[in-house]
Image (cartoon, rainbow, N blue to C red; front, side):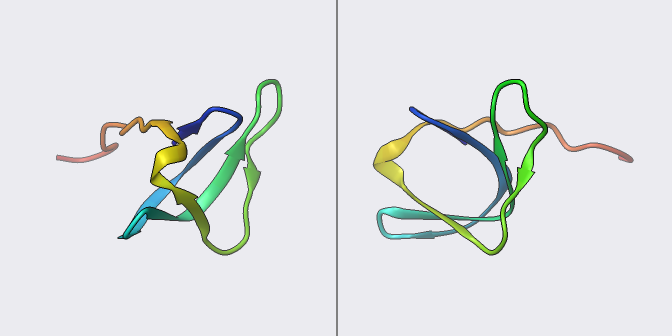
Amino acid sequence: MNLADKAFSGILWAKRGPLLVLRDTALLEAGREPQPVDGEVIVERTRVEFIQVLAAKGGG
């Protein structure tokens, strides 16, 4: 999930009105390793620039 000022990787867990809830989240910053985030990350939908959905890995 990309915002104007940061990006996260994780699982979109829930949509609650104007909010998106991410779990198993990491903060992504240029030139750094992903930084795990404890708990849930709540993002206002209006702040989201785009969401990238990766193809499933593995069997099938």
